[in-house]
Length: 339
Image 1 (cartoon, helix red, strand yellow):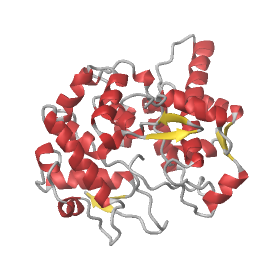
Image 2 (cartoon, helix red, strand yellow):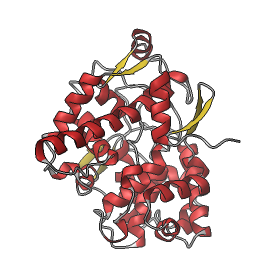
Image 3 (tube, rainbow, N blue to C red):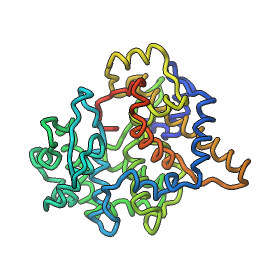
């Protein structure tokens, strides 16, 4: 079977063929200008990762890096069936929703003495044990508990076969971002985020890429986290960042797609419209990055080191912070393990 196109090439291919999602040059320029104005800010560095991930432990042990692995292995599908019905977890006086619910639940479990970051434990834990770890403060259960259990136990067994920790597993790829993503995708089936579009095999590898970027971010790009080839990574194609890209005028949806989303239509994983939203998101961020690099060269005479992962690290919290202003733009909903 032919190998799928890599995420960047997949994004470009989808953007060239897309019928329901379009990249707008004026929006690309506007987004690049916005990022240019923040070029000296910490939010556009590896250190900015910690601002968006305040619950992440200090990377002083295998346990801390395993925390990143456990969280990213289950980092998918947090949107509620009903907008008013969010799963919530309160930790140290702060109530979290969405992805941060998972971070809070894993951190809470560690404090309760559950060895949730030990692959020996999480490779064999029961569904009931995981449900207890991920319990919410209200009666709304985190979606896809069975699937989260399956991917966590499976990935735990992989770590046990490769030294027993995420650090020992990922060290096999050296410190090269591309080799890290390829290793994760090769060894752990749940990270194989692929689809077929217009007869071509393509890939997004959202969680595999974010796992590498989170490792880089939690280490603040120092020591083992001094990863080369970070520019190989694309943005992480999910459902929140596309909404921000539409809001910023970077992406435009066809009337038919916009109406389908407003009607609450679920898009199955691999649906051409879902693939176009994700693929065009990837390619539009590549164009924004290119434009930003050009602005810095022309105006500052400087080489820009801001990569697509950092742009994503900025856009995801941006979407959360501006969710009220973006409320009129529907988020696409696809229930799957990939994002």
